[in-house]
Amino acid sequence: MKKSARVLLALACVLLFAAAAGAETLKIGFNIPLTGDIPKVGEESKFAAEMLKEDINAAGGLEVGGTKYQLEFIYEDNESKAESAVSAALKLIERDSVLAIVGPNSSKQAVPAGQVCDDNQTPMISPWSTNPDTTKDRPWVFRAAFLDPFQGPVAVDFAMEQFGAKKAAVLYALDNDYSKGLAEIFRDDFNAKNGAGAVVGFESYSSKDQDFSAQLTTILAAKPDFIFLPNNYNEVALIIKQAHDLGWKNPFMGADAWGNSELMALCGDNCKGQYFSTHYAAAGASGETKVFIDRYKEKYGYEPADVAALTWDATNLVLKAVQNTGGLTGKTRADRKAIRDAMAAIPEFPGITGNMKFDAEGDPIKCAVVVKISEQGEFVFTKSVCP
Image 1 (cartoon, rainbow, N blue to C red):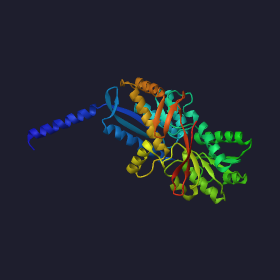
Image 2: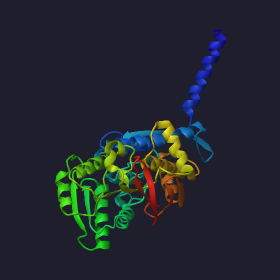
Image 3: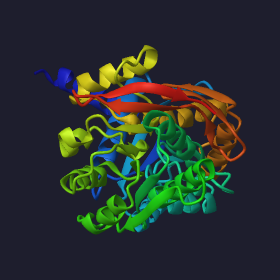
Image 4: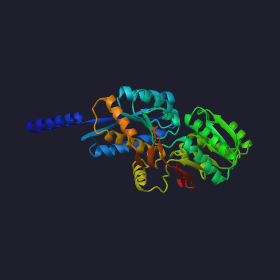
């Protein structure tokens, strides 16, 4: 190579490096469980976010006030633990200076992390948390999922209609905000609609437990018409199998934490024919929802669960708020405040998990769906229930 050509090549490399170094970037944090009890939840959140980031960056970036920004997503593992979710939030806020945080997903981590984000005036949106305490009295915290005070009665009404149920039992994780809160809401609503004492069994366990035979024996002795399980998918698989081993033949009713792509791999035939409430039904989806599902399946090799779709919606909500600021100043605290205000001002959002209208607490008013697990192991739409 001639000397002049080498000089020109070196100069081109320097200019390219300088351009890349000077490119505007926009940092968003993700507080998700990449390890611990529910790592698939973290994986699906990250995969959905990466797909969205690649789309936007490949198109030149996110335009905000006439400036294009390349997206930088920073993923922090909360290990499916409350204390780790707090540490992850602080790292993203203080070390990484992110403008907003997506996650945590599970209420067990979202409730304490939400307090950290609110205290540090950093916008946070949980894709999957349904416990009211995540956003309650926290103006910096939002969510993309419906709430348990809505989801609990959906399960009650469906079970009464579908099973003709007059008596119910509940088995829940005592140390999980989501499971405990939803169990209590369900119990109170079922008793109110069927008479005091209609919930004939209300048993709890620690989320580290693997053997539920004692609680299930007590429940089966009370002879409920069905068992409500507001539990994470990994625990559901163990509980249902153990109940069947003890001779239980009646139905179960579940909630949105069942809706994971690993459920059927863990539960198999034991879960077929059961129902649960959730945020969307992948089987039979149409429009933009189907586009997302098909792209995700092609890219990652399996069908996305609700947490992936909710992460897509939650991240898009943050990006919409960023654009609605009209422009960023480069001053982290000021830009966080502008994004929070813009998020609070979004009146309605057309997500792939449904259209959302937001109330004063930052909670979306949106429909739930009930799905049935088919003989093929698919989550098939059964009915939609709207507020």
